[in-house]
Length: 325
Image (spheres, rainbow, N blue to C red):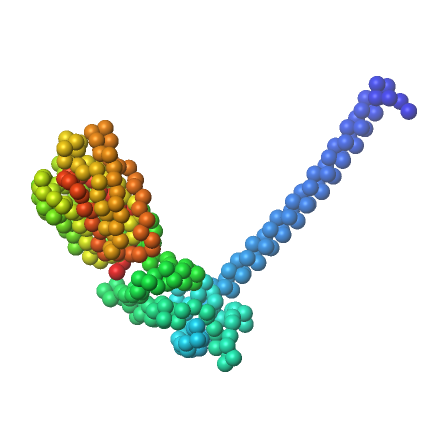
């Protein structure tokens, strides 16, 4: 057999044609495999979409009365009430598409292994939501503090947090969130009846302008001040239409007075809980940056700063959650 060095042009052309044909065949095979894989992915996607549709689509009989055994206590409601929180696990469970997979007691009632008193509060809220209006919104469940953690766990388990507490439950600048929710200026939250800023004594800007310390940028060259020399000095913020959970704060002191009139230690009260805090304010560092606090899951309607000495603050930010009362 002749070696490649002895090939004629005809031999080279034939070899190249054969190689091109092999490459084409291999490419065609790979394209076919890719097409089959894409078809399998499409089929899986259609299956997932159908499963999602079945989970969250309420079956016929939306007004059926559903008998429940909740932790040993019997309750009755309509399927429509249980499915009113669209997209939640609770709605999926009672959509009618998965009744056969739900736990049942000996009397064939659907069994939920949760605290009956807490679930009754949630069920009452879901019922009220169906007859509520913007003028008369459904009140949120009132839960004793010793049951708050268990209640929050149940709400999250059933996927009801966003439905019951809305996007306002998301974390961020509390005062900015209030302004966005109520469509008002962030510097006029007190003017619009959303909160009150109360000082134990006043030596800086006058009371009608105290709320502006919570605005986007706060004050400049003036500040929220106590009557210098008075002790103990407090700033109290009372939330009138919402409750909050503070997770962090940021404060900026007035540079001109920071050395002589800005206390480096304070107590921050969050409802009935409190935390001792400190920051070395100075002309070079008049702003605390973000200071984290941890008060657990409780939502409160009042917070307070208690300073050992004077204070002169141009800006206050609270970070955390906001929930309508």
